[in-house]
Length: 429
Image (tube, rainbow, N blue to C red; front, side, top):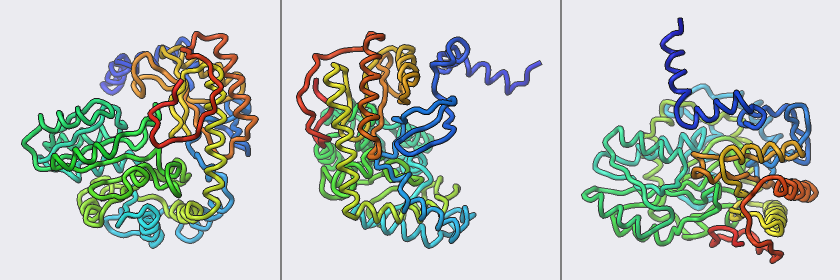
């Protein structure tokens, strides 16, 4: 006889996309590359998977700092200085490296203060409920990151009303805020860069509407941190030029190649989060070795070396974009080093990812619910340390893929791609 726990798991396994993936695990396990084990790595963005070496285009270590000798040495030094963990919630104490890292983060960004969490998801799930009460509302872009949605759910459990507005649509935001009156304050939550489409929010317009309706902006800039704007400060600084009436969330584990996330804002906002944000109070901190590594990364971001890394990274993005356009592929992205090639149906998207893998290139096959139903993409993540021959080889694999699969097409073009733009919403055909 099965236990109630097993019965529950069986019921859940037959619901929604879980059922779809379980069917593929049984019928076509080779195409469902969702639990890939990387057995080894080597320079040149090689990884060994299933016993074979393939080029890794699935890493969000955009600047390649995970392989930077100085960053690795700082991590090792952090273990020797602090051990593997500081063993307490930050509600009780913080190691000096944590305090210094937050001060340096704020100085780099140009904010009054910053607060670190073990992940961006925990930051969003902790901050949104902490910054609101039952007298307030949260309004999020319909395509905002899942962790923003989870934070809204936690806030809703405390009586906070919430709603979503049409993607990147200031008029619909205004309509939404009007419909929610009366309230005390409104949180307008958006992504700084929408990672699957490369779209950027109209922050200036959204900021003005938020102000006009007793609200403030809350921007999850995880995918802009380190790769957008001067010294990688991100989308908010590049677009607005200040942080007035804005809460910024950033990632430490993508371009910065360390661990965790952070929230940056005025000092009074950070002090409130320190006292009200449950994941911070009741959870563990970022381990100290990653704090010393982060300090070295911040040194790099504020040095001439950063510009060299950005030149290499932007050149790789341009190389892939131009090649994909010559092939007539439908391409989204380019504002950050994430380039998505439209495939379409879920199963075909997974099969296409396996096709590229068999030819020596690992990319991420992304399907619903991360993207709309029937709009699956192959998500390519470019790094500064991808050699040009790896990108050329991937383009050859895409050309072969196009001959086998009925991919959506646009008219091929050889017009040079001008490089990442903060004003582009997608790469035009």
